[in-house]
Length: 242
Image 1 (cartoon, rainbow, N blue to C red):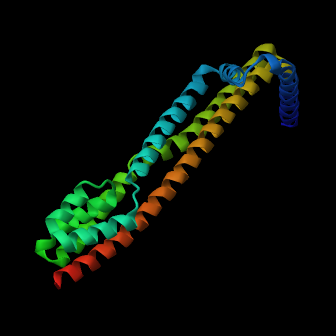
Image 2: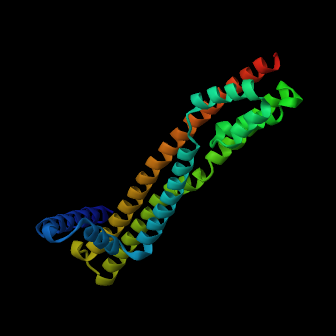
Image 3: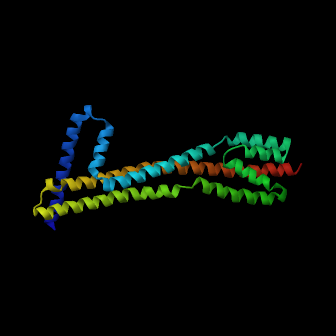
């Protein structure tokens, strides 16, 4: 067992030295190489078998995240200005004109206002129930796709760690075949292990940043929807008394 741990320490030291030598060589060739070429080289050194699935997770996760960001961006409106215009239209032109305003306005707030107005003839209790129910529907639509991003956040480092295990197994297979402990012989397998782990962690970090940003945007929109819903009930209550 002591010999085993000593081997791991020697192998790790050899890998670090190999990385240091590669870094020094990279610095001397940096003038002739672009960052794209360096990244592509490291990607190929990590092995297609494990780097490609992590890259696919990153690309799909980013695609979903960008789609959610665009959806939330288009759903965001000047709520205060819309409510003022809605109140003026309702009091000046009636319920149908206010419905047309809601139909022609994008965003969840306008949709909730339309659903509330659509049930105005059934009483304010029906309006409140419609607003609450449709608010939940709008929240579900905004959160659509987040579960997939969360899956890729968890899956990317797991695939990277799996590549690490495979790389270590390859290193020990080389030791068994050679019948001798040589850091140089096993450095390649350990290098593959480290690169796949690094790729998985980078993918997870990037997706996590997008995920947290999207969640914060959704929370902001949900709070806006709740405040606007209360304002809608107040406006309709005042309108019904006229």
